[in-house]
Image 1 (cartoon, rainbow, N blue to C red):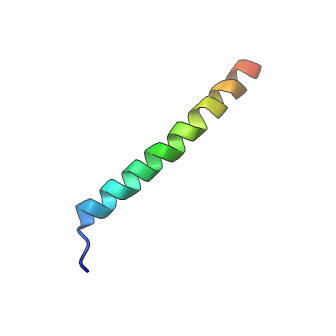
Image 2 (cartoon, rainbow, N blue to C red):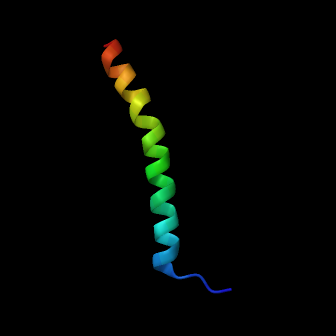
Image 3 (tube, helix red, strand yellow):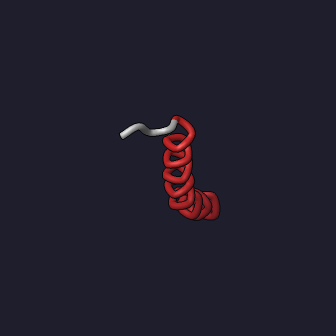
Length: 34
């Protein structure tokens, strides 16, 4: 099974966005604590 480079990039990007989405509220809470 051959995987497109763009397809892989898309998967990595969505995964990255998901991680970022989970990190942002945490960072915001930290910023509010300061």
